[in-house]
Every structure is written in structure tokens, then in C-alpha cells.
Image (spheres, rainbow, N blue to C red):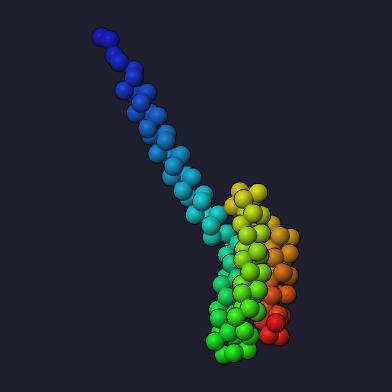
Length: 113
């Protein structure tokens, strides 16, 4: 009896690709929700709401809000760049650095400049 190995090989490759895709998806989900990244991004989101509120209340003007949002955007880009270098997460030192930068922007929001 002669069997054709090609369908078995294709089936095996298909199964392996499904397994790889599932693993990659699970890994990317974890990376996206890594606790240190999540904390940094939550702070950035909170600061954006604060900027909006301060602008609405007249405590800062549009130019100041634009400047502050630009600084937050720079911090977010740094966070994303750091995460790309380390398989989707950031180190404690990187988190500390980003938090210090966020603290500076937060102080500027508080002081209205």
C-alpha cells in the first residue's frame, strides 16, 4: 500500500501554524497589559483628563494644553520604544524614569504652565 505523505505534512504544518499563532496572540496580550506599562499608560491617560479639565476651567490656555499634551505624547512614545526593545515590557528602572517625567508634567499642570 502506497501512502501519500504530502497531506500529512500539510496538516502538520497547518496545526503547527495554528499553535504558533495562538502562542503569539497570548504573548502579545500579556505584553500589552504588562503591569509596569499599564501603570505608566494609566497615568498618561489620567494626566490627559487633568489637562482637559484645567483647560475647560480656564486654569491653563490652549497653548499650554498643547505643550503639556506634547510632553505626554513624548513620554508615551518613549514607553513604546522601550517596550519594543524588551519584548513588550519595560524594566523597573525604565518605569521609574517615565514616572519621573510624568511627575514633571503633573507639576506643570498643577502650576498652570
